[in-house]
Length: 509
Image 1 (cartoon, rainbow, N blue to C red):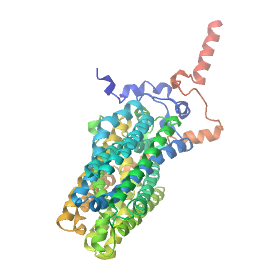
Image 2 (cartoon, one colour):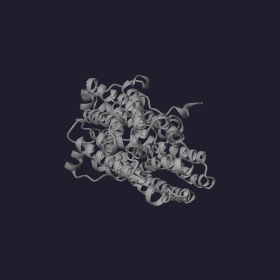
Image 3 (cartoon, helix red, strand yellow):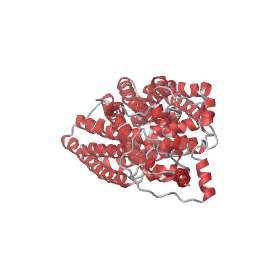
Image 4 (cartoon, rainbow, N blue to C red):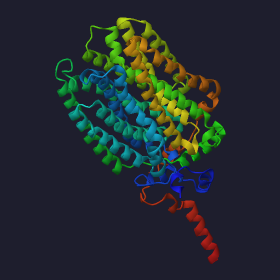
């Protein structure tokens, strides 16, 4: 009766298909298929760098979408405090609604959709839910209802968390395993670009007259911005419906890990024994909480240490800090070509701790510069924690991705506590809460560098997806074109056909 809930493959499901292991070319035959079973080995885990470029580039467009939504959230928070007359702690409710959806959706319906119907349908579903949430900003603006805005933001968060439940794991596993951290950091860099654009749009298009009596006009601008967002994401959902996206199943990931088990020491373990994953979830929870608290109250901090600045100028300072965040992501991606991701993760987390501590003590422009540098060092933490935590999960990869995305709920926990300190004391002292988050988060890279270094470093030498590219170049064979709706197992390999032909000749003789 509950078989439809059993979406993960068993080890036997994987082993039964390894006698005739599909190749990346077989996976490309399925790139237009409307549904692929999560128990099927499609060969997509062996995609070469060249074969993965288009799907990775297409999914990367989604990162800009939630980067824009997240960047706009930071500015909406401070301006709603002015236009709607809410306190800093109440303003944290906007973040609580947005990030609270990240806890509910991945662990319930969106995680199930990803495992049951695959990445393509999860992308489409997430975009549609995001679009509905964006449309709900219209009646919320008409009623000038802060509760309505929080409800709308919850729906937006549900859609974006659904996208992230699929996009982060997909970028991580789509292509040669040795480049997974580089791929995710590079894609997440476009999320950072969206976070830079959003504060500028808010400052120069939405809340132009927030300092005078034009609050109603500002809310109307919010309505039109989100109406445009809704139209854009609905169009993007149509694009994903018709786009060729090879499906990487949990069976593919188990098969890929077994191919490299001799080097990495991979062993299939039940979900409850994936201790590295659970530590990564705790680290991600604490880090995201600290990141969101810093971003949400960056403008409050700016006005506290620089009373001569207006809210609009504070938004500009936030955009500069978000630009440093984007630069940091590209810089970290470059560094990962030469240095191990576990070491970069540790160094960047230490940077966050040093500069947030300095921001608490430093006055004026010095404190503002320190807080801006915190965003630079935050840049690669999320994507690196995510990709390192998925290493070696095998058939639990999609469920592990759901747990990691749900840890973003930390963004709903830290901001209200930080806002309460701002209301009671000041924004500079409130940065103690993000400092606590970074101190908890750093335990994970310390653990990885002390106890998991050999295993993680071995994945950077894995040849899956690399040998296939070398063989393809050597043979100069074009990728085969087949019926996209036909299962890969219906096609017999040339060796099987040759064997059958020889058998028939023997029988005739």
